[in-house]
Length: 196
Image (tube, rainbow, N blue to C red; front, side):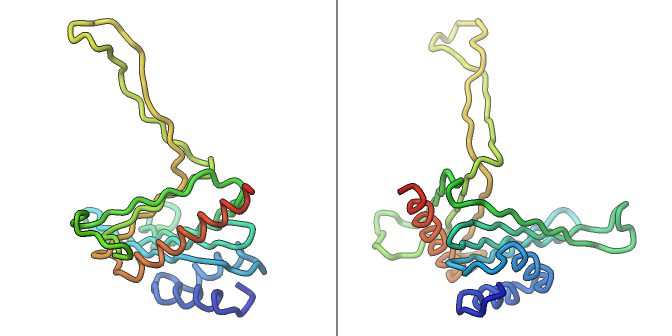
């Protein structure tokens, strides 16, 4: 973020607009990006309600010419490590574009029979995999015989699930849905270019 291009300024403005510890978030992203020009970015601030507390999170995704950068910041309530005040944890991960194995974009549209090209989805789920985290879902295997009591072992799926980001028009606004679609397209194109 040391460069002053339009995309860099747009990212800084988006981080500030999120209102979620902008100095902390911007510094973490700046350190991860270094001097590389930014191709595309997405800032997603999410608020969750858990019993008696409200918790906020912000995720910043940045695409450069060579890397995909994920920055995530969480606020934590006071605990044994900081008994007198709340604190925030920020982590960044930098992934070479060639390591990204999948970019999945799921779109939820209302009234699909009336869908017209260019209509904004009601909700999108962006899932990006690069092999750092995998989820295994297992269940007992069975055969077609309803009277069979034999042990058939287990069956299941292994899914790369490094990052999943859900954005909805109702919760995040239409601009965030558009920005998510644009970022997903830029990332898909960048990862396709690395395999040529």
